[in-house]
Length: 222
Image (cartoon, rainbow, N blue to C red; front, side, top):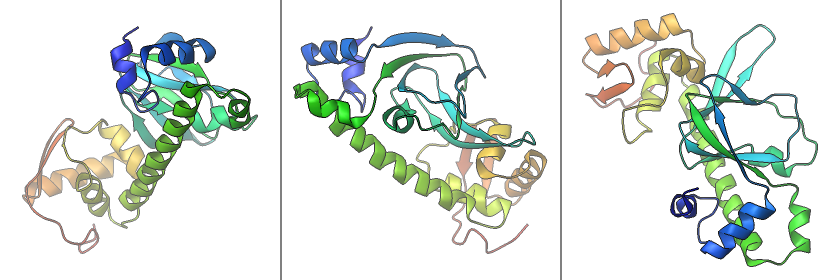
């Protein structure tokens, strides 16, 4: 296990080697490999485990009874998922955690916050502080997704999303981008074609280049 990599992640930031060893042992850490589209954690289940992505990526998605999928977030290398459910005792998951590609995940048995008050170990204090920091940043990401899906037009949603990312090698394929923006894939592809024709963007697979500024997401409805 690459300890130098682990110490750079948000969840283990600030820990010494001895503290990291103690944390990995106490949290019953285990490395697991998953194939693309394999479900890691199911909606409706309860868990006391959270995942840290070591390789590849994971997507968090919601699937309704009619088979409609909404992608809520993308979890890349070094990021964590399911930490809220792991700490909320017996709270059923509302989403699936799915391997977005072949990936390796470090599963950690976190448990409810009350367990930490009985052990004053420094690594536990650092861990809970880091988890709170993760919670804060994920709340900001969730707020960002609300901005991405609030415009009425497909063009507005695409531009709201592209304007928020620093690089345009996005983590989604076309179907996943459609599911993230809550639009139909065919309509999305059609709109992307229009936007390229209008000289607003160039798009090739996952690589996007924003060519012109876009002041108002819904100034032109499509």
